[in-house]
Image 1 (cartoon, helix red, strand yellow):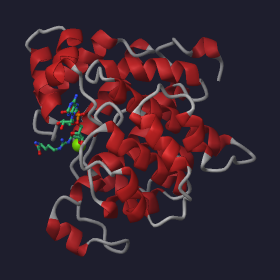
Image 2: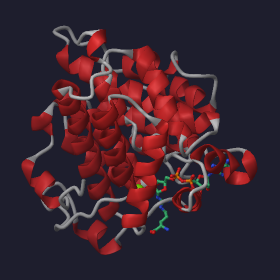
Image 3: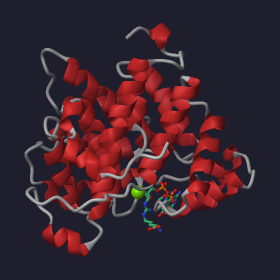
Length: 305
Ligand code: F2R
Ligand code: MG
């Protein structure tokens, strides 16, 4: 991939990678969301998938918005992204958006500039929810192999809704991990999976997210995931700090099998749709398109562009 292709809006290779990340993310989001229904949890296992239709949530809505902007503008144009997010929210407000996100998107739709709306959230500290991370895998896929650009573009994408450093760090971490997964798939000699964690952490701004990923890198990938969830958090707080380190640890341990990654993630609990979206977006880039089974894709509702 040459650097001079970066800004061209019409870039089929970048687009195909971003859409593969979206496929993993959206199927994961819709699959994970099923596990909030107790009657589904009771029955579902590897031999009995939750019955269709699997509706997707805000994670997928916002990831589609990101790809639309990348395909139109060739980069994260923040004004365009804010407009897309607000339009998509108004068209379908019941996709399970976070409380701060609803407040923000309503204000943006009313014409308040995104910079003010985003900075004013949570009494002026900005959001550190996991919402910027949940939609970031397509950015890492689009700019795969260009870590400096990924850091810049993922931060731009986060800032529109998550101006807090932790919110931005979560988005950068997921985008870097997605790029790493793509490169891992391409590599003739595969680097060890823990490198997903170490190479991501070393590029992050000083933050709780970074500290959590450094901690995750020291936990053997064969450890019982419930134990790791209790150590790192698994999204019960809906924040980047409480979500991203565990999701990256799960993805590193399940690079070869999308379905196993999804079942493992869903069974842990926590923020299940978002955990599955983050892990799914990364792992799909490691497995390639064949990793996400046709049956799973068919169970997810059709994506509305
Ligand atoms: N939130 C949900 N699901 C529960 C809501 C369901 C919904 N009512 C329905 O069923 O219709 N899911 C989605 O939210 C998460 C992404 O959240 P996002 O976009 O980051 O939102 P928000 O509100 O900005 O942040 C989430 C929470 O984090 C805490 N928080 C963030 N910044 C904070 C700060 N500066 N100070 C203190 N707390 C902060 C708050 O508790 C926020 O509510 C995903 O799970 C997505 O699927
Ligand atoms: Mg959601």
